[in-house]
Image (cartoon, rainbow, N blue to C red; front, side, top):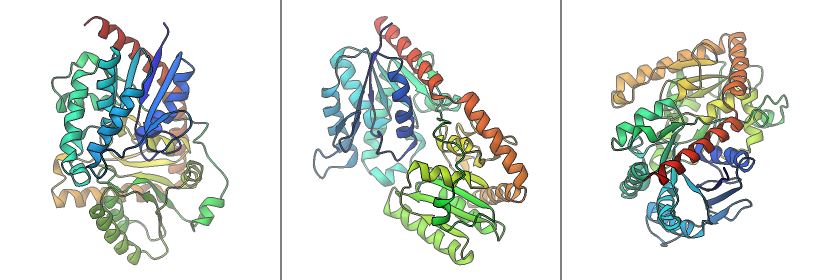
Length: 398
């Protein structure tokens, strides 16, 4: 059957800061090989390949309300299509409005869930209640819901029990192994001051509660003395989070002079690829992660992973084969003793691999092969189109 789809996203290349943006940026080219039309509506600055809508109206309003202003503009710009696919709460309001306006089905992808990220109230204040309300409405009214991991199914149903289980479909995130692959060059790592003759632990991500970076920084105090910690970390969600992290980082830096590197600016993806290639391992201390594309990026660069066993991460990182998993229970996040033990276990997992580089290398090789075998974007695009077809059938059967 012919297929015309409109993709609604806050992020789109070259302006990407999170996993949802990476997902859309990789998915769209593959969809364009399968569909008659792939329209892309995004937010922010004008760019090639998409229609951009500024998050500036009403001026001075809460961020969530300004997002709704962009959503209205987005809904008005969508051409004649067969299905609308909205990514994250930022665009779900536009998807609901446009679906009714054009009389077509709406699909939403669960990259994350607002009820599982209560710390966002620090960032959005009252806007968090708005974002949560929009997301609830979107999941309940969508014609199909895509979960990026098996683990997300239970999370969706727990957060939104009125969602029909039959309309939830698992389509995992993926990786392009031709983009993320081992890079033997050393110009970037050398320019950052990384010592390639000693173990290197790398983190890539934003400074947010979700990514658990403060836990890694605290755990780093128990790493072996010759181990280097390289943080490619920027864009803190709030001034409070930034201040908390900077204090913890300052204490670590004072205790491990010359062994901690913090790169605050966002590096180009090709530079990140080189840093990952020369890492002994990649550390992912997330306390919430529906799947975790960044783990796939590290694995595709033949880098072992030490990660918290939350959300969809165990569906990516095979414990003992492509890396090591550290148990984490979100329900005990307020227990200082439990968190201290989690940080201790995180350090133990890292030390286990930095002390055994042959084992880390074997895990890295296994990780890249897993990326190639299980997480190709071409297969993910075909699965996504299958969901579109199911959504159209469901919509017509109403």
